Length: 165
Image (cartoon, rainbow, N blue to C red; front, top):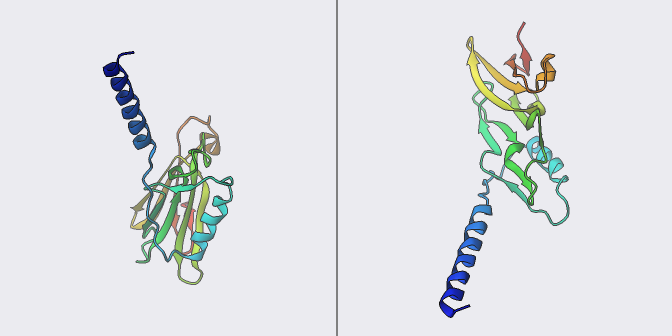
């Protein structure tokens, strides 16, 4: 191989390696330092799923802080679609979506878990002047085939999200 061709080959290999490492570099979400204990406990429990030597990665979108029950206090949503252990990216996901853990502030109890299940999508909205949570879940939970759409709407009743009657 001629020297110029060898240099060109090395440059192509170096460029490919740089592109691959840049593409595989993941952005890390910065988590707030003073999360409620119930939230940090949930995160630590799931960290145990990482094997020795696997670095946990909280990607942007893992933690959302917002008021979901209209009490003026922050609530916490953990979306495990945005979490990985080392190179394993879908540990907490399946055909029913990804694990979501949602914690709402409650006047007497501090923070309470309001959802800890798989969901394809979780949306918070106000319906009939009430805080609501719309969850897209696996079709079998609605008596359908797994791939069929199934949406559950839950309303905040002052202490939990509950189906409306």
